[in-house]
Amino acid sequence: MLTLVLVVIFAALVFEFINGFHDTANSIATVVATKVLSPAQAVMLAAATNLIGALMGTAVAKTIASGLIDTEVVQVTSQVILCALLGGIVWNLITWWKGLPSSSSHALIGGLIGAALAASHNDFNALIWSKTLGDWTQNKGILWKVVVPMISSPLAGFLLGMLVMVALWALIAGLSRAGGWLGRLARPNFVNKFFGKAQILSAAYMGYAHGHNDAQKTMGIIALTLFGAEASGALDDLPGWLGFLHPGNAGEQDIATWIVLACALVMAAGTASGGWRIIKTLGHKMVKLHPINGFAAETSSATILTVAAHFGMPVSTTHSISTAIMGVGFAKNPRALKFGVIERIVWAWILTIPAAGGIAYGLLRLLEALGWA
Image (cartoon, rainbow, N blue to C red):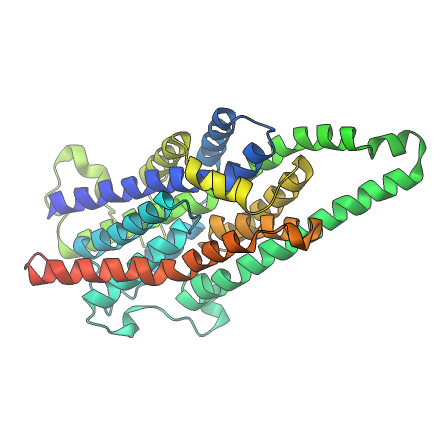
């Protein structure tokens, strides 16, 4: 049993590494597309800011650890968690290979839902469906923590990206009308140079927000694994050198420091390995970007992610940055958007939770048939 727990923790860190290179594109695609930074420079910036962001809170981790699956209805075994992780990993690799910016967050959540349903033999009561605002403020519930953000964050990304872009253009137009030295600030050359510099800050903000929201999801998975192992007695005879795995008297709302550090470092390492297939889709195929466009998209997306992380919502980095880019492109010229590419991305979003969930469900059923679960 202890070996299985260690395998699950390893698989969780593999997922975190894949999340890093899969979602690297989300945080740096625009700064690469606008040629403000080289790919290598952008990756290192994203890795460093991912690391900082991952160390700055655990609200999302607590949602994953105790707010989605009802442990009184279904026993969360190491096999359940392993199948959930494999569901997310397989779907992430498929979409990465196809160059589609799907959501690692929703792949993981889909895996959890599929594995929990399989373990409970299709009892939907195994999932926590919040019906009150009170549950939303307590980091609990698929409705408030997954469904609502899944719908609202893409809309918010699109609208905020469009509004920020319009506001920046209004500011530039005002400076141009003012004339004199203020008018010189509105000249295209100065605007490009200024936002070229400013986009480095917005890209750092985006990297921080990505780490702050996404890294916490795997923290929650590892914590959930250890709580389940503790309940089943798998950690009763831990050797001294593995004593740090013991949750002790910690409740489900506590995430151990070693989990936070491990996930932060692994995500940063994954980010440093890059993800150029998805960068090409986000940064070049949807709409042509200039530094001012990249600044608007990154600032909008990062703000949404940071606010969501504060409230413990596992929001998709992919959804927020993709729709922010769409919003910026729409403000620029609705005809500039390449709707064929956008359609492929949206289909990847729609399929992510059921696809990852289906893979996890099938894997757990297979383990049960083989007598391993």
